[in-house]
Length: 291
Figure 1 (cartoon, rainbow, N blue to C red):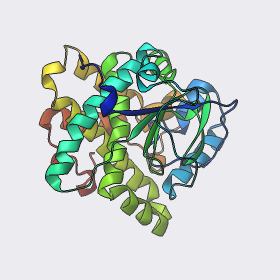
Figure 2 (figure 1 turned 180 degrees about the horizontal axis):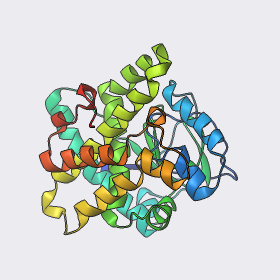
Figure 3 (figure 1 turned 60 degrees about the vertical axis):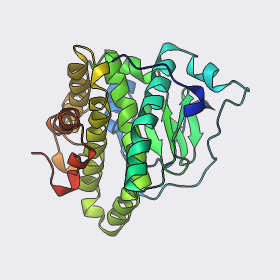
């Protein structure tokens, strides 16, 4: 996918620094990778990760507000150009801002740009501490999309999902959670999860599938930039991070009641729906789950 180069005035990026080990803490809605990726790829205790993911259902905690730019004084351009992956991410962020802001304006809903925060190993977000093993995530407390770009190497090598479109899908998915935050859906879901813990996972699955669909909608609105093989790369990535696939690859029995992001088939279906229709109104996962 040939995206235009980012305009530094149209994006908000920052550097979250890093700290050894990362630590635990609460994360907001939107970790792309569930606990089993941590177990499968990074060899960490899945029980520990599952405990962290349970806190995704809770209201985002308080923490430091992410800042534009880096602590060492680097500019937006310098942060975006620190490596090829960060440049791709900044290009995607610019495109996502330009795509979603007019839609919010037309709907009469206030829009705020999210901030893309790059870090290495671990960092502290507005939702608490995080480590790269948790994968990219969105924190509603500071409206930040957090990513350690080394994840992309893991996505390609361990999970079998290489390609630039697969990487764009990651950013676009997390941006979808920002859309849910701005529309108020995320808060509604967290309230419902707090009222009924037994249905929390099912609601989270619907959130994740909708973010997949929103990622497809963004790409569909830029069909002129899509290259041969892009859609296959995206669908392959969606399949590789389905809950059932991750459970099998980790040597565990598939447990649908434990799903937090949806099966491979569901994730592919909702991403493809967004890609096919290009219509955000077709992303109502709360009207019924794909089977």
